[in-house]
Image (cartoon, rainbow, N blue to C red; front, side, top):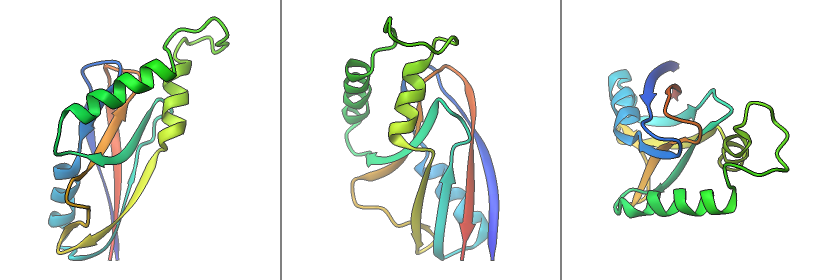
Length: 134
């Protein structure tokens, strides 16, 4: 059996990593699924989803800094007329989905891992789609 749910995510800045681990775990608990897999999908071309450390909040700041340094917002060589080429590049590098095992009724992540919505063209209201399968 599988269930598809979704929830909104509101970003407050241009580049932001938002911990959505608890949101997804809440959806899993609501379905009563104790073991299975969870697909988390972001249907946006300038946003992404990733798994990374959630014990030290400075990690996401460092990631944002490194990304902005490696992929600057403005570059005279960019041709995309909308002006958000960097956001598209960052989204493609991270990817639009993560597949995570469910164990004990929640995401089976490592001790220091969390699931993050990655905003690269904010602030915006976005959607996260979750498919929970037993």
